[in-house]
Image (cartoon, rainbow, N blue to C red; front, top):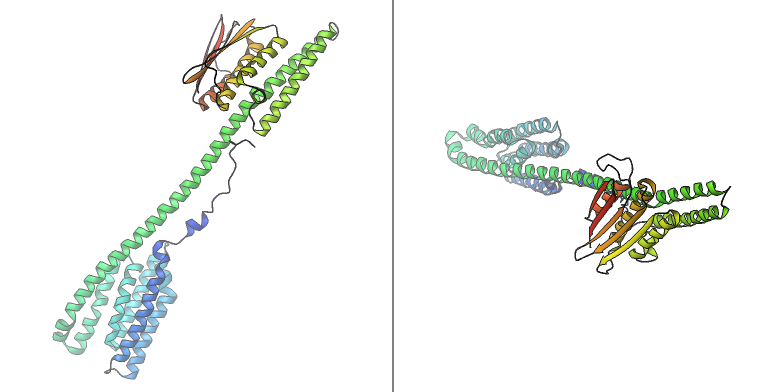
Length: 407
C-alpha cells in the first residue's frame, strides 16, 4: 500500500470522555464522608446533653436520622443531577431539611449543629440567591428556640453574635462552593466541546486525505494507464489498416502495441504497489525521458530532441515523478492534438529549482477555454503539491509547457 494513502484509524472512544463526571462530582465522596462524620458528631452531642429526657433524645435522634435518610434517598440525586428538574428537586429537598431542622431544634438545642452540613447542601442544591434565602432563616432557628425557652436577653447576647458569624461564614463558603461547581461544569463542557471538535477535525482530515488520494490516483491513472491504452489502441488501429497491404508494417505496429501493453502492465503493478513510476525504477530521470522520446519516434513521425543544462544532480523522487509525468502528458498531447512535426524538451537544473520546458510546432489551442480533459489539471495539481508552478503558452506557432519545481 502506498505510504501516503490515508488509512482509516479506529476512532478514539469518546463516549467515556463525554459522559465522564465533572471534577466536583468525582470528589463528591469527600462531602459524603463529611456528612457521615457530622451525623455521628451530632448524635454524640445530643447524648451529652443531660437536661434532655430519654424520650427527647430519641425524638431528636429520630429526626436527625430522617434528615440523613432524606438526603440519601432524595437529596443526593437532587444535588448531583444536572437536568431540567434538578432545580425543583433541590428546592423540595431543602424545604424538607429546614422543616426537620426547625422541628428538631425545638426538641433539642444541639440539633442546631446540623447547620454545618445543611448550609453547604443549600448551596449545592440551589442557586446562590435561593441558598442565601434558605440559610438565613435556618441559622436563625437557634435564636428563635433560645428566645422561646430562655427569653430575649439570652437569645440576644448568647446566640445572635454567633449566628451572624455563622451566616457570614456560610454565605462566603457557599459562594465559593458554587463557584467551584460552576467552573467545574464549565470546564467539563469545554472539554466535551474540544473532544467533539477534535473528532470533527479528524473526520474532515480523513475526508481531505481520501479526496487528495483520489485526486492523486486519478492523475496517476490518467498519466500512465489511460495514456498507455490510448497508445495501444492507436497502434492496433494502424496495424489493422495495414493488414491487407504492408504486413511487415502491420507486424511492427503490433510489436509496438505489445511492448506498450507490457509497459502499461508494469505501470499498473507499480501503481498498485505504491512504488515510483516503473520508468524511474530502472534508471534515472534523464534515461526515462529519453525512453519516452524513443517511443514517440517509433510510434509517430514526429522529430524529437532533448537537452539537459545545468548541474548534474539527483533530484528527490517526488520531484522526478512530477517532471516525468509532465513529459508524458505533454508528449501525449503532442501526439493526439497538436499535429506537430517537431517537439523539443529541455531540462535545466540550477541552484534552487529544476525547470522543464516542452515545446512543439503544432497548431496550438486556446488556453483560456475550459477543457474537459484531466491532463493540464493533473500537471498543475502535481506542481502545486511539490510547491512548483506550471505555465502554458500556446498559439499558431506551437505550444510551450514550462514546469518549475524546487529542488
